[in-house]
Each structure stands twice: as C-alpha cells, then as structure tokens.
Image 1 (cartoon, helix red, strand yellow):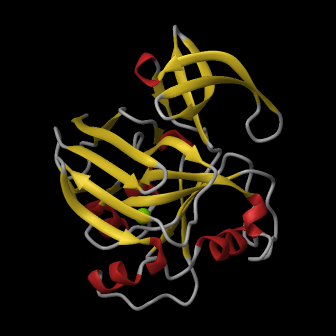
Image 2: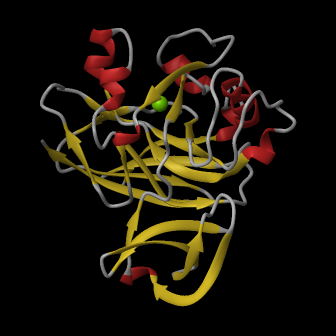
Length: 252
Ligand code: MG
C-alpha cells in the first residue's frame, strides 16, 4: 500500500495512492484509520511530505561503493547523526541553497518510516516496527561538513530533507534499486544489497541508542556518485517499488 499526505482545497489530508487514484483516509495511519469513499485524481491534489517525523536519524557511510569513493575504511558500526524535523519538505517543494555554503550535494537514500514505539528491538523483530519506506534526499552542504567536522549545520538547513512521494508498506529493503538523477541525468544507481548495515540491523542498532517513535524516519545512507547541485537544478530520487521524489534547487 502507498500512503500519502496531500492538500486539497486548503485542507491537509491523508490518502491511499493506487495508480493515479487517491482515496482519502481518516484517523491515524500508525494506529487506527478508515479508508473513505472520497476519491481524487493524483493531478488534483498537492502532495505533502508523506509523514512528519519528530526526528530523522541518518547513517553515514553505509554502502561499500560510497566508502571506496570517499577513500574511507568500512566502519565496524553505523555512524549516526540527526537531521532536524524542520528540514523536511515534500515532493515538488524547493530546496533552498543557503548563503553560507558554496557546495550543496544531493544524497539519494532509502528512508525507513517507523510504525510503532521502538526501544531495544532485536534485528529479528525489527520488521514489526517498520511501517514502510520512502525516497529521501539527505541534502548536504559539503563544504560546511568538512569545515565543521560534525554534521549539524551541514545537514540541518531548512529544506535539506525532501521525503516522498509516498510511504510504501510492501518493499524488500534488501533488494531495491535506488537512483538519483540531476536534470534527468543518472548520477547514482545502486542496489540496497550493497548496504554495509542492512535495514533491520540499523533499526535494532538505533533502537538501542534512542527511542524511535511512529513517523520517525531513518535515512539509511547514500551510495556512490554523490555530487553538487546548483540553483535551478532539478533533482530526482527514484526507488523501485516506491516512486520518484522530485525537487528543484532555488537561491535563498
Ligand atoms: Mg547521507
């Protein structure tokens, strides 16, 4: 199932996406909801981020190819950092190129959406705590990441976490093809089979550090092929089985 959030006639709504048809949902998608009779065409609604996470827990260096590209050793445990909830934007929203940076990169990633309160879960039990998956762009001010030596500013600007277009509940996170396109040109393409730490291990690991809440998102790391974006560029993160997340870069 594909869950979305959208705006229609000034109202914020949740919905189920089937092909290009949107069915309105009432209630809480993480606990109890009802699929209504009201239907719209996808073209009649404005998509919003498919969830509003309280936090985004991101993983650095989680693909073997990206570790080679960065000339870094394969880490022995996941490197975690946080992106603020205020960085989240939805499909079609603008990524604002901050004045503080001269180098802003895309990082196409698989986003994991948590479905229920998750504390100290085992890798075997982790699938029960996952609601679904979405496309995510871990936008990064690369120059500030190098300069600061830690990630809060470089990863935390408003608009630096596009997610969407939907949350897909049926996906094999160990065999998805993830692609990033810049102005229609392919820049990243990898299978999640190349993960150093697979999704269930990440959920277990993070849940031993901090409580994950329904709607929280894990950014699982980017494959090789990272590169800069310029104002005016159109960036797309595409994951097989989920869909395409499009955003344009604009000047601050
Ligand atoms: Mg990343």
